[in-house]
Structure formats: C-alpha cells, structure tokens
Image 1 (cartoon, rainbow, N blue to C red):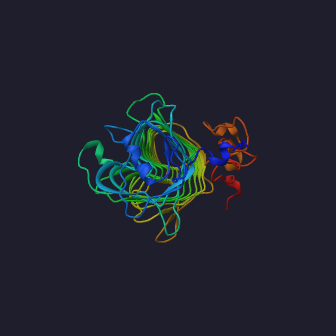
Image 2 (image 1 turned 120 degrees about the horizontal axis):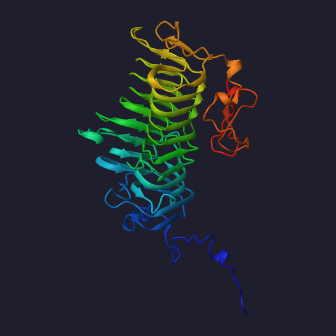
Length: 439
C-alpha cells in the first residue's frame, strides 16, 4: 500500500527541532548557533526559535572593525533574550560588533526583538550593533519589561581625538561612515524602551536609538520611549549627533544630559522631522524640546513635552539655532532653575544666531517658569509673536512638511482643519493621535 505524506506534515516552514538529524542551512536554533555566526561572517541566517541566553553567559560580539559581519540575519519577528556583554575596555559592543553589508540596499538585519539586554562597552555601543557601515536595518524592537529592563551602558575614559565621543545608542552606537554623499545606511521602523546610561568620564554622542548618524545614514519611522541618563553633551532622545537624516520619528521617554540636549537630536547638522511628548532636561546650555543646538540643515516638528534647564539658550523647539531653519510649533512648558543672569529663553527658540535662516512656528501655548518661585518669565528672544489662528492653518506656513497625500498609515503631515500632525493612522507601531486631541 502506498502512503503519501505531505512534506508540511513532517516539516513546518523548514524548522527542524533539535531531535531532527538535519538542519536548515543558516538556521539559528539556540544561543550556540547564534554565537557560531562569528565563524562565518558572510552567512545568511534565519532565527527559527525564540532564544534565551542562559544567565551569566558571556557573549562575544559578532564582527569586528577588521573583520565585519557581511551577511544577513532574518529574525522572523522572533526574540533573543538575556544578551549580556560586559567589556568595559572594548569598542564596538552589541549583538554585532561591526556590520558592513554587501551593498547599501542589502537588508542586513530585520524583524528581530531583543529583550532583557545587559550591555557595557567602552565606546561604539548598541544592543544590536556597535557600528553599522553599510546596509539596511529594519523592524527591530528593544523591549524593557518590569523586572527585566534592558540597560545599555558606556563606561571608562578615552583620552584622544574622535574617541572622546561615546557613540552610545540603545540599538546602534554609530551609523554610516565619513563618506559625504550617497545613502549607505538606512535604519527603518525600529523602536526601544531601554535605559541608556553614560558613565564615562569624557563622552559625547548619546542617543535613545543611535549615538551618532553620519551624513550617509538615515533613521526613519522610529521611536524611543525609554530613558537616557548622561552627564555629558550631545544627548538626544533619538540621536545624539546627527549629520544625516532623522525622519517621521518621535520620542515619548525621558532625556537627561548636560549641554546640547534635545528631545529628538542633541546637536544637528542634517535634516530632522518628528515630535516629542517626553521630558527633556539639561544641566548646561543649548537645551531644546526637539533639538539642543541646530548648526545647519533643518528641523521640522512639534513638541508638547516639558523642558528643564539650569543653563542658557533654552527653547521649546530648539535651544540654540546657530544656523539652518526650523519649522514647527511648541506647547512645551519650559522650566528654568538657577540665576536670572544671562537668560536666553524662548518659547520656541532659545537663541537665534546671525547665520540662521528664517523660521515658521507658533508658540502661543508655551510658557516659561522659574522653578524656585514658579514665576512665569518673558520670552527673551521675541520669537513668540506669531498669531495661531492666522498662521497655523496655512499649509504654506510649514515649509518642508509633506502634505502630498492623506492616506492613513503613511508618515506625512495633515492639517485636518486644525494643527498639523503626523498622520500615522493605526498601521504603524506606536501610532499617535493628532496633536489637537492630546491633553
């Protein structure tokens, strides 16, 4: 008698169990397989199970500066839990140390969830990768659950030159290269709820998602809802220092730094668009709801989060507009702690430099207070005189905003007969309501 058995009955989606004699080539079944990726850095891998790395297991980052990972990993929306790396004297720390895709269009890592990460490195630190030089990363989530919070830390001291930067992000430390043209790195639809701690004696470039974004790199449709704690400069809710692009992204967590602290980006030379609903706090100068200091390029978006500062150049949108252009509006409450001396506070822009381009914004909802007395202060930049009713309903008031179509689920701006908002609908992770519906 001939018996016909469907292949799917024996093997579902080609996922073997460990009891099978054969294995799918490139299949990752356990943490041993994961670590073994170091032996073939050009391989194409697929995560076939949720993986839990045993406690106190020392994991070694996959790929180095001299021998980067050039293959790919498809997470299939599965998770890796318990990643622990404590290399206080080592650079390029994360699940991957250094990634360099075969081309700028190569998807190097996608659809992966990281949980309960404990990561410590000296510099270029991110739970996914310390440094990505080329390729596309998309669909990555870093979770942080009660009792199992993901923590990414930079520690130690680096004395010379470029290495004074920490380049620490909850997901990626450094994105791109010094190449000034082209788009070699794309970071799409990633999010994090981790805690990022900068404990170095000298450090800059700390971001909720990415520490430093070069001109040939871009972050899109992503968000951060965790916490950053740093005593240093260039600290941003999404990116510490941006020279490339940050588009259609937002922050709802808390950011604490010293100077050049922003809800989206600490210091910006590129293009930024998005919004902030979290808290931004800086102990020094140049603290802004969206960007701490803008030295070029453009900033587009809105903020309704609170801004706290002990220094000067503090604004609801941008703390110090040294150069470039700002489009947006603020409903932030700005709190100033300390002396009244040399105040430079703005409901939208704290300080406007001589080379700054024109700006379009409204700030009639913003207020500035002294923390010690709760006294409301006046805007010292004279940038709060735009009439909301006349200006905010005009599409041409928002240069750089994309109003091309109103399809729900796309990251574009809509007026909706009221104030502009990112029209994300319900199809994007963490989709938000328009600003006029937020209390």
